[in-house]
Image (cartoon, rainbow, N blue to C red; front, side, top):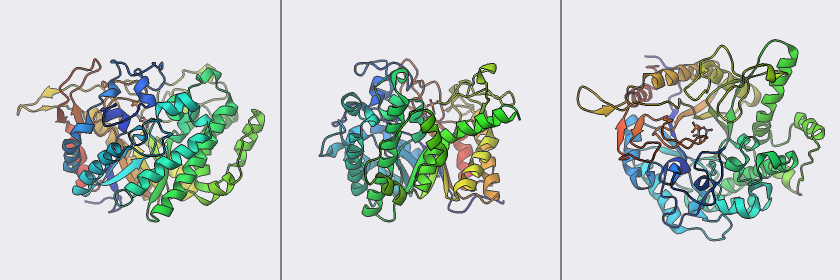
Length: 470
Ligand code: BG6
């Protein structure tokens, strides 16, 4: 058996607190932006929690974490990505003292992971800004958020300094351009939000991210800090140079975030974009140095799909999918939710990032959201025959192997939603990503029992063979 995956490759799965923990008001947790968006990240905002919001109960990981971690261990996970719910630690976000019960919960989770030799990979902010910071300060448009975030990260870095080594500062940090409330806690409706305020919010997050890196290294120099971006390779719709330029400009809106995280300064191309759009970012004294001196150790990203772009996109069918849309590529099939499936896009993303930065890369989200049918097999066990998911993941992992053969440094791969959870964009259970089926339905019914899908055994073999069975 041969494999191109390095022997210390970090195989695992990924989740986020707000999509699976549940227990939204237990042990002193405050509300987050997710508790008031029952229809998902782009849907209407309710005054308070409502019964139709599946995230409030999630899949009840809060009370079932031991059972779930045992299942991850059975698959052989080396790493497990999750997030800390900021509002469990600081219920309103702007307190000076943390909530001990929230801290104690993550102690138990990290201890349980270590019991099985699984390394935690922790996102500090995964679409779950405390709601109070949104209502009182308009989220990241307000510079005060930097101080609140620093207080929060200092607290968790200190508390878990011997339990967590790998940290991500903001989930899909570039998504704030497309989902200002879900991603940045910005209450101003997108159609009323000025580009000036939006890019100023971006600046605040970038400064906060650099500051987190600085604080992290002071607390434990061995910490490894990564940025996390949505990777979405953008192909020109035709070889018309105008289409190529349109695709290049679209990609730069993404690269802006990793460029600053890796190179520590705003790239020149964005200065022109700012001039053309009357945007003038307010830097406070020290911001420039902070960004320059606190760059990331690695780049992590989610990859679900590629998109196409053209100088005149209105001529084509708009693609559906993960946040950014773009034009549908006629060469690709799509998932039931319209996300176009493009394994080679992952190969391209890995090579493009590595050509640009020569830094280690970590694929921290990838997977297929699909409708699963729970059946009873010939042995009387409940399961799902999810060959479509196996095919999707196998094809993508083969491309990871190809990139590794090219010399790209890949630290690991954590598939998204390794256990079924509530989807972010549409807040439903029906869109499942897991190797583990959770009995919960869109109407909130279900026993919450867990069942192993066919992909569970497939992934177990992939990990055990370090990719040789792909
Ligand atoms: C990513 C997010 O954009 O996509 C996750 O970081 C999310 O939180 C994932 O769940 C899949 O999206 P969805 O909408 O299918 O859950």
